[in-house]
Image 1: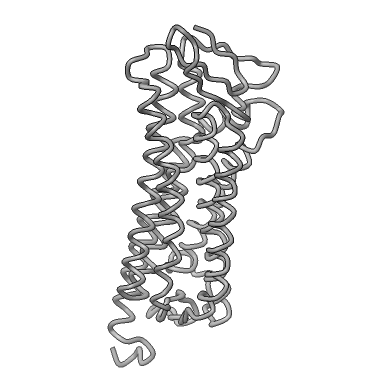
Image 2: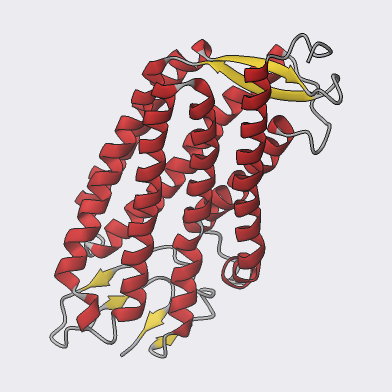
Length: 313
């Protein structure tokens, strides 16, 4: 140990734990990318020439999340040997992650808002209200990030085997950083409440024509809510504990959002194609999902789903 005077035993342990968590979380995200890439080709890139907001959100969730995972490997492991750590480099990484993480979160929340909008028969007042809620969420968190991120202390730690490369270790963070995630709790709770209420009203489990697509909408929306809620709760507790736990929680939180975000689109488009009641309108492109609505108004108690395709019963 005397050969490494700048490294304490605690720092070495923290370094190792961060490496393991980074590799595990990044592996999950890369694995998810590989197993769903064929769906991405079919339902996004071959879906038609029209470029929609949904496709933009998909690319953000898919590739920004993947990019963050890859960069985390560079900053938190010694697999690449690319990082020559310095205080300025590590601080730039913290700012990049402080900006990229919320973009992932807001993209997932916007997708959930569009689902709520669909469930409530494309109600414009509801859509505008939820967009205002999202704008308030973005504003509050942006101000909080701008005030608290400069208080984070990040230390460049060299590796024992090669002192020219290393990682960026968060050694100090304000405990108040936990409150950053409270607005996320509020927004996610409201969105989930709308989905749950509408699910009870639609009762898709009792309708054979609506069961597939509507169930996917409810299931994936609920799963995404639970993932974001769990990640936010973990982050609140972790940053109250110590910076290392907060850093690990943030690493997994970004992975969870990136992992859960893309199925919101791919699963819905896959289910629409599997439905025997669906006829694809190739002129508009295969399930562009630019706008869609679920209606409960007809006398036959079947749901009508409209999202760039025509659905018949």
